Image 1 (cartoon, rainbow, N blue to C red):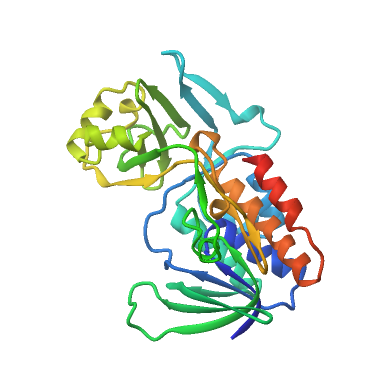
Image 2 (cartoon, rainbow, N blue to C red; image 1 turned 90 degrees about the vertical axis):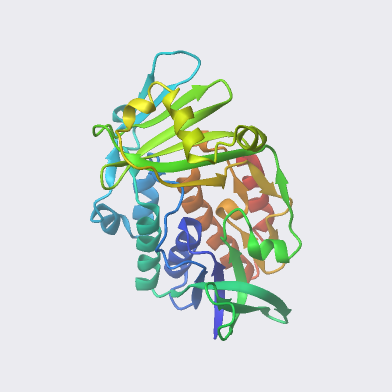
Length: 333
């Protein structure tokens, strides 16, 4: 199959790029290649204020409101003092934030892109790429069964929205520049009460993050440098729970019950040494990732995907905006 734009990655950045591209040029062929089938847990569950504006612009705000996600009234920080500090969204001109089930949220965005006319290719990874006279040939394989028959698509332009691994850009020679060693070790626990605020609680060698998720559960993450987590063996559930018991405000948010699926995930800040090349551009976490304290993850991804669609449009219509895009990404980082 031949497309005008292929998007590698079906998270918020990839879906936003597809939605924006179909709005800009409805007759263009757009494909989104996503490794998952949106059937497993994903990190990142808070949408900061300002999401209504961009989701409305992408045409999926009504669908989002109908999905039953929980509004977030604000954030709370215990940092530099033993007393919590509340940042209430009530006084924000951009409205409340939201707690979302990321797998369901990402699937919702991609359903919106499919309804807009983009083709969604889920459960597939881009295993190899080959440059051609007018774009790229992408070899796709089943993400769960590498022995399954491969599929080939062609695209005049590629947007890499594959997350911090930047799978397409790395094949084109781009390299990440890493600025720290932050990781998160997180698990799901039964919630104590219905406090919908996001909480950050500092500790001497890291910090706790916690946020309400569906089914009266709370996601709790210990954030610290990778070497400290390794030395203290905090990927071990018993040690992780013991560290949680030494917190004050975070511990009070959880009730007794089984710890679900403790796992570690990278949270370091990084950026690619180049975020565009001949016929491609990187967007969202593929281009840059920020410290989670910025609270910009999902919203940044949505905006970056939309802007990346502008770069793709300009390139395919023989205008050059990639240099301006690179400067914007570097300035934001």
